[in-house]
Image 1: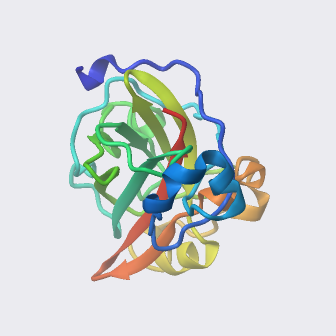
Image 2: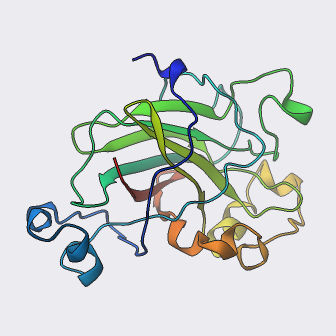
Image 3: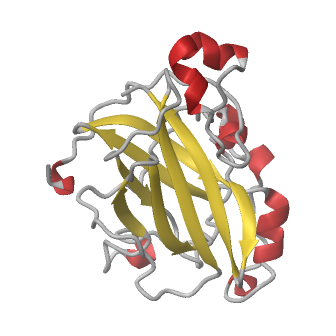
Length: 225
């Protein structure tokens, strides 16, 4: 199926809570317990909450790993794993769709970015381990929102998860002391004051580690396929 035909039907996910810092999925024990095993802790996986799509979605994004189009910023690799909410087994072939603001807080296709509809947007298929990887930059801030990345997960042509991924404020403070972010001081909203983050964003916060001159942000998303 062509990724450009992926539908935008409403999310079917029924998701729980929890953070798996190192993405070490215990799939071997999943089949015996299903959702009850997840609830009891016998199976460990991250189940991210449903969060709003936001106003900056553009359908028909490109299938690609590097979504920067040469725009400046601190390098960020996103490692997004998709697992079945009932078994915690990885889902191969899911289409993971991401979009976010550039280092200047601009979205492609809107406002100052209206002349280009593609930067900081892309789709990747998950591999046999349920993993989709993107090369991007640390997002910039814009008025009224904390720093975030939008994500959709499509399985079999249906949207099974819509969410937003967040970053620890202390890390954002550190990144924003670097160029080009330092040219725009005074971001106005932190996580605790963000209207979306307070409705479950703590469970959608990326685990971020330093890697060379940039960072790697990871999370696993449990979906009902």
